[in-house]
Length: 133
Image (cartoon, rainbow, N blue to C red; front, side):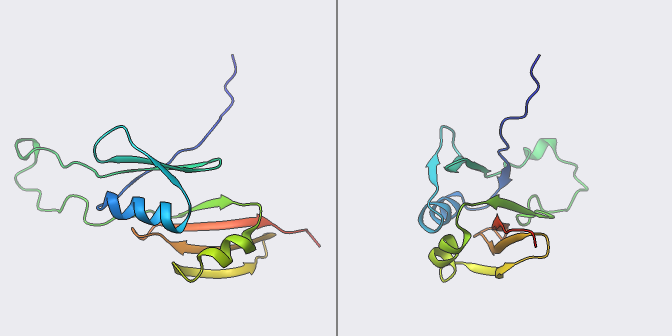
């Protein structure tokens, strides 16, 4: 039996699906595909990120004492790291169109990378390996 892992496709929550589709397609060059309401699969080359507008439980399924807002904002306790062939080229195409979190730089972990925030506030890091000294 072959248990090889083949692909990772994170599913992230968004409050505004149309805004998310616009960001990923116009700024980052992803293609959008959706077969369901409130859901989209965005892909470019070998990278796929899915987004869904989460649905709250019906009122009759909720705890009447639970006052916490359902899905107050998108959250991810880390970042999505995307390896690219030419990080400098991608940087030059997007840096003036996005909210830059960390600028393009060679890092001590032998990667040249930069990070941005998408329209939801999720951090996307784009990088490529640099030669070891």
